Amino acid sequence: MLVAVCVVVGLAVGSFLNVVIARVPDRVSVVRPGSRCPACETPIAPRDNVPVLSWVLLRGRARCCGVRIPVTYPLVEAGTALAFGWLAAHVGRSPVLPALLYLAAISIALAVIDVRVLRLPFEIVAPSYPVAVVLLGGAALARSDGATAVRMLAGGVLLWSLYRLLHLVSPRGMAYGDVRLAGVLGLYLGFTGWGALAVGAFGGFLVGGLAGLVLMAAGRVGWKGHLPYGPYLLAGAWIGILAGGPLAHAYLRSAGLPG
Image 1 (cartoon, rainbow, N blue to C red):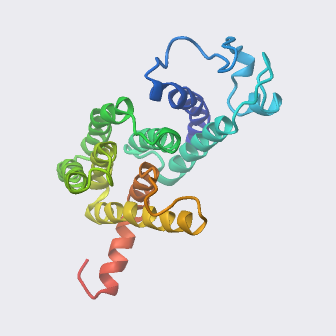
Image 2 (image 1 turned 45 degrees about the vertical axis):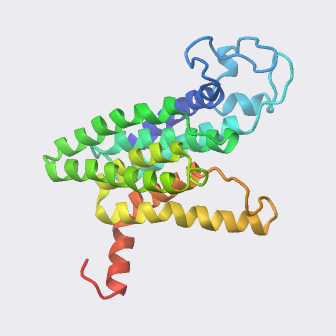
């Protein structure tokens, strides 16, 4: 039941994320006006605004003017639903589930926006600090675990500081939006554990480096080309959150170190 509910909620959240992705980079309200066709600005009827299903029934074209609706719309909706359902199945009725669902939602929105406009909007990242502190802090409180709350805050400070240092050393190589996002992700990684924090911090560089090599080999980007780092930073953080502890333990054990 929990998984089914989260899937349905994920579909609705994914539909809203499409609005966020389309409007936030242009600093347009996500509340008003209501959903409209991006080509002719005709209001979209409720029957044409059902997540995924409407896009399929309309064959990817707007009813009003026939303009093509990008496939990213149903992909965002379906991806959010799948992410919500998987997280519900993975953690169950854990007090940390709301925090993870929130992170999944902003991860999808930020990744798509960064790929499109090479920017991580302040309007999404900055409010995520208090939201993460409240949701994660509430989960720690539910467990009566003050040490986890302290580690959460320490993780946020440490990862923000690391990326801030990189930004100071190479402002062109590390945008400040990545610094800002790193602090939010550090809260989650710190909450999960020190091993998760270490793996998540390294994971972003690893995933980004590998992706850069693949894109250069494919001729999609040159040595001086600029890549959106946000999606790789997010991917590294999720690796740390979901598997950081076991990975860190396995590394320490292979190195003959206690852990």
